Image (cartoon, rainbow, N blue to C red; front, side):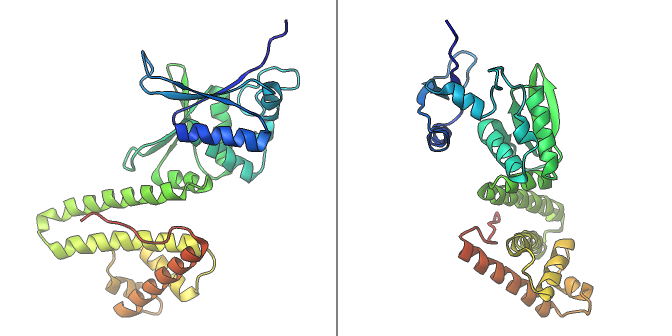
Length: 283
């Protein structure tokens, strides 16, 4: 009797399980069953298993799990590895949702994907390179992980996969850490004004960065200049920024341009229904 192919997908959360079932139905037209696997033994947390039995062979072939001779495909399908930029973003989006983890920003900031094998891990590294992000494979005890280090690279890949809410939270945590670091360095001076200035400079830099991301190329030259001055001189006072401008500007003039840049970005963000430039800082 010929063996029957069954497709099983295991995820960590009920929300993700529901999304997978919906996508299977909407995109591939297949029904699936959902079961919860309770924690126990070496399994520390509950898992959710989506199981497809009817038309599973067709699904496996459509998704690149098997080839035309029903042989398992090791790694990722060639059509995805050499696909478009949108395909590359979709691959990483799926990998992060299925087996991704993100550590708090800091010196050891890491975005990590647990891969099913070395072939899949190497394919993810190559696909990340097409998105201008450097990723590396790490192997320990037979488990292959794809690792993205450095805060800017992590933010870049998160933007590519459309995780804008996560990016804002991540950037906010980075600001908090930077502010605390500045506060610690200034503690010996016992100067509240310096503390507030440090917070304001960090927050302003982050808001300007977000504003320029929102506006892209649609920024008036004089506002772009003010924004670039702030980004390139995050610890500088407004007086210092004014002196760095060509021609030099007053403190009020540079502050006004930065305010108009932020206001313009927030207006555009509101029209598009995306997060604006507001950043919460610790007290």
